[in-house]
Every structure is written in C-alpha cells, then in structure tokens.
Image (tube, rainbow, N blue to C red; front, side):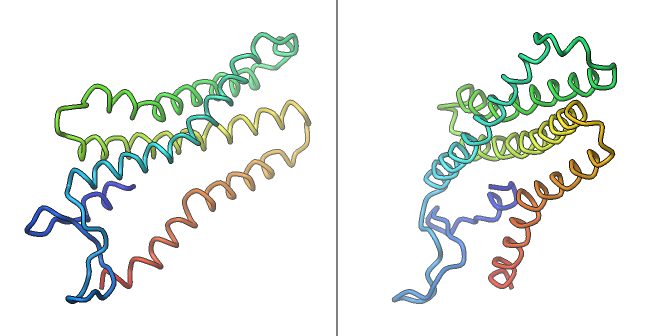
Amino acid sequence: MADQDIARESEDGRGRTGGSGTEGETGPRRGREETADERADRQWQDLLQETRVAQTGVQILLGFLLTVVFTPRFESLGSADKGIYILTVVLGSLATGALIGPVSFHRIVAGRRIKPHAVAWASRLIMVGIVLLLATLTSALFLILRVATDDALVPWLVGAVLAWYLLCWFALPLWARHRHTSAREE
C-alpha cells in the first residue's frame, strides 16, 4: 500500500478507522472498522503477501545470473556484454536487498510499537524493489537478446517488453486507482 494511502486512512474519535463505505442501518457506514494497530497488522500481512511473489522471482533470477560468469561462454562475451551482465547482477542484488529489507526492518523494530511506521517504510522498500526488479528484468532481457542474436530489433523488442511491464505494473494500477477512488473522494 502506498504511503499516501496509509496516511489517508484516518481515525475517528474511538481510535477506529475506515474509508468511504456503504449506507448502513444507522447512516453512512465507514469501510473497515479497525483500530490503528489492527490496520497496521492487516497492512503488514498484505505487504508480506505482495512481496513474496517479487522476492521469489528476483531471487531465482539472481541465482541464475550468478552462475553465468562460471560458464565457458562467458569468456567469449565482448566488454559491452560483460558490462551489461555486471549491471544486471548489481541491479538484481539491489532489488533482492530492497525486497528482503522489510523482513529485517520488521525484525529489528518488532515490539517497539511502531508498526504503522514499519508498514510505511516496508511499503517504500517494496516499491524501490519493484523498480529495481523492472530494471533487472529489462537489463537481463537486453543482454540475453544481444547474445542470442545480433539483430537490430533487440532494442525495439526490449522497449516493447519494458512498455508491457510499465503498463502492467504501474499504468493499469494507477488508472484503476484514479478511476475508482476519485469519485469517492469528492
């Protein structure tokens, strides 16, 4: 959940929160009725579920990338391809760190009664990790297609895949967010 979404969930006078909701028996009912601690727990669980998929993907990709340097073909790569490989491994390592970071963050601050802050920081780390994963996948695809073919279409193919990632990971969710929340906030 984005930081502004976390901040947007406001408390009522009883320490409970809720978003815009439906009409209830006693008037307008506000979304979830939960305390700040309950909300932080729910958001933490949501973050864990979301990050498991990305963590697994980036760790598998990084594992394969780390083995490439030990293959006989690696020595025959040109300096540009070796540079792209190094960049890809570094990006994958950074993505892994950002996506695993929330676990360490939570473990270090557990029991300090700052879970809402931990949720906000974990959300930021996950978004950074997703952007780094996007860069890792794009760089890895570019390297693989360069090695597999000398075709001038490689940049165009990589650009098309990058556009697809951007559409699926950012444009579509932002469009849905705008479309389905702007009417409620007015």
